[in-house]
Image 1: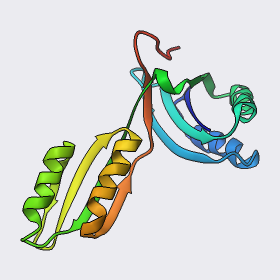
Image 2 (image 1 turned 180 degrees about the vertical axis):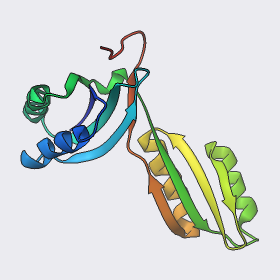
Image 3 (image 1 turned 90 degrees about the horizontal axis):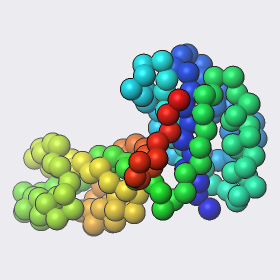
Length: 163
C-alpha cells in the first residue's frame, strides 16, 4: 500500500541526505520524493510516497521523528490529499501526425512545450493516474524521452501542516 508522508524540516545542507539515509538503512523503498522551501525560508517540506503496510508506515514515522532536523511529520490519508506531478514527454512526430498530437494535448489539457521537425514535447501537471493514461496515449507515437517529477501533496480543506 502506498503512503504519502509530509515532513517539515530545517532548511539547511545535509537534511535530505539524513532523511534518505534513514530510508536506505531501514530498507524502506521511496517511490517518489519532492523537496521545496515553504513560506518560511528556514523550513523545507519533503513529500515522500513510500510503499509498505501499516506497521512499516508506523516505523517510518517513528524513525523520522527521531531525526534532529525534523520539525513535524504527518502521514496523510489518500482521500484527504490533493496531489500533483509534472511530466515532460518528447514524442516522435511527423508533420502528418502533428495535428493528432495537438488534439491529444488539447483533450488532456497538456501544454506544448516544444515543437521541432521530428518531435513534439508535451507537458502535463496532474495526478499520477492521469499522467499514466497520458503516457499510454502517447506511446503509439514513439516516446523518445520522458521526465517525471516526484509527487507533491497538500491536504484538502482547511487542515494544514505548519509549524
